[in-house]
Image 1 (cartoon, one colour):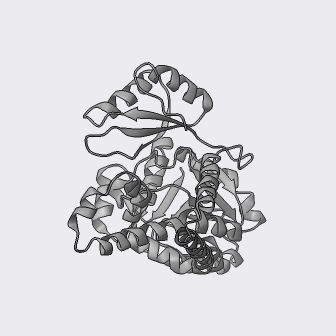
Image 2: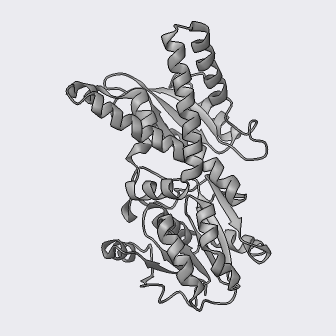
Image 3: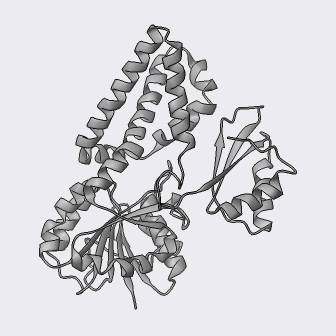
Length: 363
C-alpha cells in the first residue's frame, strides 16, 4: 500500500492531495498543518486519511511532500535528514525558489536519501485548504529537479504517484529555474503589488478612483491578491535574481518616461509594437518543444448566465476547457472571455460551435 506524507494544507498542498486521492483512491494520505482547522477540514472532506505531527508518521511513507513556504521547507529538509525514513522513499517539495531548497537539502542528500525538488507553475489569488482543487495543475508546467543520479532514476516513480495532477513535467536546474520564475512570476507579482499600492496612494483623496478601477487594471493586478506570507518568503529566497531583473525593469520604465517627456512618438510606437509582437508570439512556436495552450477570444455579454451558456455548450460537446479568463469586463459593457484549450483540435471544434452564437475576437 502506497503511503503519502504531506506537510502543508494550503492551496498548493491541498490541491496536490485532492489530485492524488482522485487518481489513486487506494493511497493512504497523511497530512500535517500548523492550522488544526485545516487538518479537520481535510479529514472531513476526504482530502486526507490521517493527520500527523512533526513527521511522526513519515517513517514508512513512500513519498514525503513539503508544501510550505521555502523558509519552512529548508528547516524541514534538515529535520528529515536526521529522521529514519523508508529506504527508497522520495522526498519532494513545491517551493518557488530552488537554489535555496537544494542548498538546504545537501545534508539530506549526503545521508543517501532521495530528493527531487519540484515546483508546479500554477496557483490562485485564493488561499488555504478551502481553495484547493484537484484540477489546479491540469496542463500546467511542473518543474522537477533531481538532486543526483539516484534521484534521477526515481523521476518516473514520482510522476506516477503525482499522475493525478495532469501536469506537463519539465526537468531543469536550480539556477535556470530561479532565473525563469524570477522574470515571469516573481517580478510580475512585485509590479502588480506596487501598482495597487501606488494607485491607492494616488487615490487617497479620490475614492471614486478605486471604485471605477476595472478592465486592464484588474487584469494586471489580479495576482496582487496572493498570500503575503508566501510572497515575502519568495522575495527573500530569490532576492538576488529578482533585484537584478527589477533594476532592468526600472531602467526600462525610466527610458519610456524620457520618451514621453521628449514627445518621441516613434519611440513610443516602437515600444508598444515590440511588446505586442512579443506578447502575441507566446506559444509553442516560441519555446520549441514545450507544449503550449490554445486560446479563443469571444465577446461575452455582461449578464447573468452568459458564461454558463458557453461552458455548457463546450461540456455537451465534450470539449476540455483548460481555463477561462474574463478580460476588460466592466459594468453594463460586454467583456472578452479568453477560453484556453489544451489542443488546436479542441480550439477549432469550440470555434465552430460558438461562432454561430458569439462574436469571435481576432487577436
